[in-house]
Length: 340
Image (cartoon, rainbow, N blue to C red; front, side):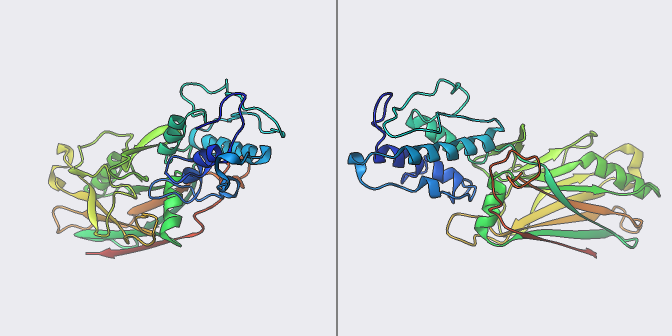
């Protein structure tokens, strides 16, 4: 890297930072990227320049690149960034950015760009939610299967949604009634909310709206039994095309001793790789199975299975400071149920 305070910015400097051949550059995170990196945003302002070291980058090109970097950092951290003046004129000299703290990512060193690129799945989130909540219309026994699926237009669209901080949140409820009904109501409360985010094995967590999430995260407000199974890496990138048990919890309290072993199980899968950028499918399917013990009784009407799709904030949202446009397009949410 040849640029320095008081020096000229050259094409090779710009390309290495903005749109280099390796993954450690701004376009890698802001644009298409690969796998768990890439928001799907426009990289026009980051187009590579030709001419090598003999070509000087224009003030406009450098300023545009800084604007994209500031926007990407803003999405990742929620802060407003102003790294470097954005009104360079011909003949301007480069200044080091005194406002870059140890925890922020500047553009003064190659290591800083690498660090910025490595946190591509980090985001402020948005909390814009749409919920599909379907309930049972009849009493059932011995088991109930609820299926929810979210389908995007492509594997890349799914990548952009999860990479930018999108999440799927699953919650369940049941009314009081018979002791069996009350038991399932308590079990739902103890399970709380199950959140599917981006991570698989690596990276293993993502930071969204100030909270660290695993691929699968259980958010509880009422203590209950330790789950029989819990697959922490079962985020979008950790699922497979095979329906896999990612969570199971049984009732184990003595107060409901006649129904011990009754359980709620969650299985999930994707439809497998769909494109060439290391996606993990264009759809996510979640199955929820309620199993009662003893199997001779009936659960009353009113079981509710809610799937909430939480999308990242967009620049078009009222009052939003997000720099993102909706790169993931539309998605289809479907629900079905059966009694087994």
